[in-house]
Amino acid sequence: MRLHVPSYLVPGTWLENLRRVEGLEWISGVELLFFSYDSDARAILRRELREIGSFADRFRLTLHLPDALAPEHEELVAATRTFVSSYVIHPPRDRGDLGAWARLVESWRSTYGRDFYLEYTGRDDFAASEEALDEVELCADTGRLLLDGVSPASWIGERRARVSEVHLHAVRGGRDHAALRCGEPWLEELAPRLADFRGPVEVEVFSLDGADESRRTLDSVQRVAEERGK
Image 1 (cartoon, one colour):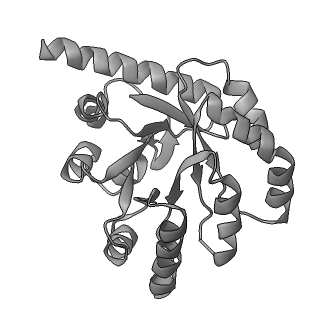
Image 2 (spheres, rainbow, N blue to C red):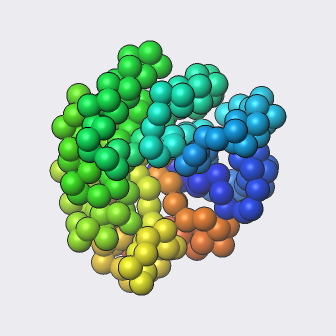
Image 3 (cartoon, helix red, strand yellow):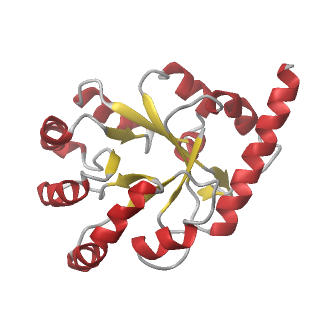
């Protein structure tokens, strides 16, 4: 299992976060977060692009594309394609734009490769978007699944051949992106499925302490599962 983290664990830019986690051996990859791509983001990326790319020798780099997608975001894909291994996309919030959104994604998949993964962000939006794209690979988001009352282990198991990335985080107080903790039944059910998962498993919390707590919790839960299986 390859554990990844998001590119915002400490306040700062993508490059500053990469430098901060470079020495943490348990981190195999980093997802570059681009929830927006405005003039400020463009300027920072132009300044940092070359050195960000150099980290592909240390990490598997993935990228979260802006929400919502727009044709001009192809600039971001083109700029990073040489060192980013895959891209995560969200379903559109306005399903009236679903046709245009699907055509845009399909054009990028045709030009840049099939590794654009549709993330689960909610039952209805995901279902409509999945139907609009032909055999798109998927990104499971445990927090959103839990908020919808869906078992992450069951959801992933039903789509095992198409799930290429997992965003792993808990829900507390009705909010997701919480650190993992022992004693949560959904995690105990899911952990054995992740043991041989070959895609990125991103601990999707936004602090170093939370990421490390999640990593240690996952290690503990998997050890218990292995002992029970003996």
